[in-house]
Image 1 (tube, rainbow, N blue to C red):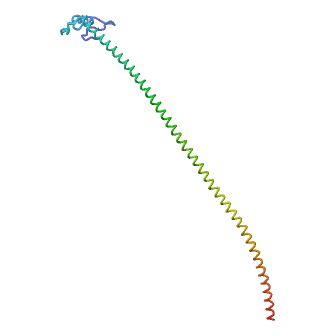
Image 2 (image 1 turned 90 degrees about the horizontal axis):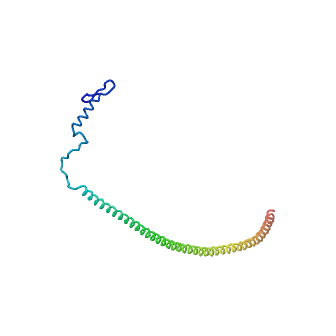
Image 3 (image 1 turned 120 degrees about the horizontal axis):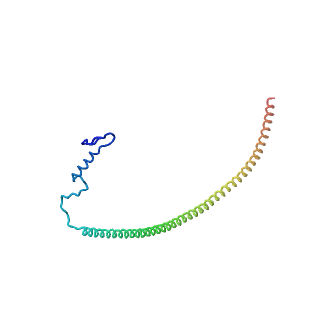
Length: 197
């Protein structure tokens, strides 16, 4: 295997590490390429604060932030409690409104039921009155029909008697006419024989 400067090669199964040593030596000679060496900054210090002052400032900031976080937590808890209280008040108000609505609905339903019951009872009473009037009308009609049938029967009997009397009368008259006709034809027959003889 060859390096960039081709200084180490594999000879007889072993590596020649002399090139690697040269590279690490060149790093030691150039301190800018070594990361363990502390470099000098090119800028000046931005503040004159000491470490203690910085710690105090950071502690004060942390305390203020802790107080602010505690205040925010208390505010959030208070808002949560207020919100829960408001929800419970709203729930109570909704429950009262629902109870009042249900009560008014029940009262309206009872009034509707009473009105319907009154209408039904009035309708049934009117039906009963109409049925009674209808029964009177139908009874009167049936009585009139029975009277008419009875008078027809009476008239039929009278007509039958009249027809029977007419038959008898006609039989008498027809019998008499037949007898008269027979006598007249016999007399006419005798007179004709007498004339022609």
